[in-house]
Length: 283
Image 1 (cartoon, rainbow, N blue to C red):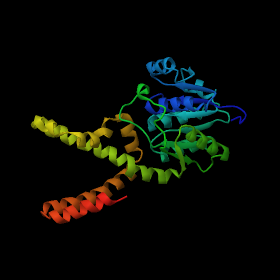
Image 2 (cartoon, helix red, strand yellow):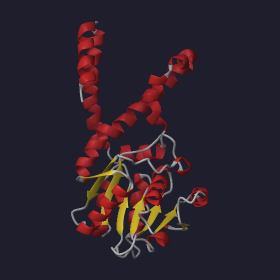
Image 3 (cartoon, rainbow, N blue to C red):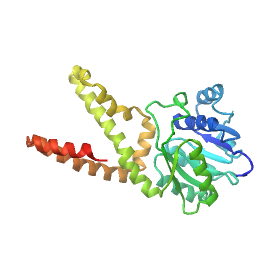
């Protein structure tokens, strides 16, 4: 990327995350031009109408060949497919990064495709249950941690550009290995999503035989099941591409749950209270 000019940024995938990246970059005046591609023509039309992007294109290759920074903002499976496509076209010296929720398979795909030197994996720890560019907002990433996972081949200037990009989004860049990233998010992000979906499923099944169950679903239920309202496509991708870590996280949580259940089954109220108090005080 030419350091004497603002970069041309290309965003492939204009949903909640991609749209919010465009919003934030426009507000920060980071980019000279913001180009976007999405399979959904309505998303592109909306973004152009609302002046979120400067230009729309009809294919990944069309946008990538114009860009100094290429951002893949889609479900993990689609990101891996896009990396394979980028490996077949001329991307010059552009930084290639992404916003996928798992990193090991994505980083491996970049290296295997020959893009390791210009690739830095990315994952902003921000989101919302409402998807689509119409729900995108410029402050989605404000003060959020933004994980950056360089490959073993990443050029130093590409990593620096990725850090500058995260900062332009008002996020806090955190450099980490893909392996450590995936273990961390299995506990802090993927397991909560899985539990949210399981809780909603259990309550809906109970509601089938006892319709008044809905009367008891107040703010606590809404808070716990908010994540289950997210994109099923992204949910399936992040769980399946990080299954080993998610299963380990689930087993750890299950051990904690068994401790609570054992006290409940034994009728040991004081011990149950003490354990709940200990958990409540944890930081």
